Length: 273
Image (cartoon, rainbow, N blue to C red; front, side, top):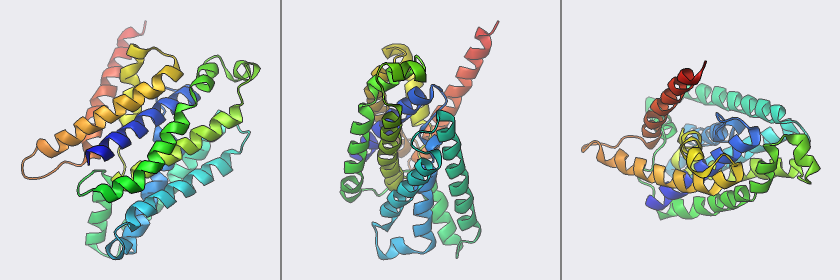
């Protein structure tokens, strides 16, 4: 369980930093390319048809397949040479479609028990996870982190604008391909075994940017370490805060992240003339 928390946190942290650097938007996070929503939909389909009872690994495998299909759709819609705005719009479209299909599955679930299973899983958590889940997710997570870690030079060049990056010999199509598929591998595998865990990829780069600098390349590995630490501590807190039950990890990370962004908004308002 601790290994999964570290791996998932590292995946979400580095994916958030990479997306914020590529899109040059500090509010970008792994869900912007539709991976989390599509992975959740894949798991919901498994719940809906009751496959997880017959085959325990059907749930994480369904999440992986859903994430893979979602990323393929995003890349097909955005195109190899499309703009950053096109990539965002494609991610929003896949997010909306996956969310609508998930809501449909909830509304027509065959039993209240299936509905509760789906809702509980979508809140995110590491309860009852074991080494089987580690061996299933870890290769994909490590491959995704390794892919995203190669983006440093390209993201640094993009801070000067796309034209300047091209003049420096950066292949933007290759950067985007590695970004999308690295995020798909890392975040898709994380969603497949733990459900939807939000705010880690959004909060961690903000927390570390003031300490490691605003250069996106320097923030990648720092965000991986920060995300791993935050997720592990949040999982420990989820188990220890209440003595008779366990808080869902996704709920706890949201409770941590929401006040943080409220503080950011208030700070931004105070700095306005």
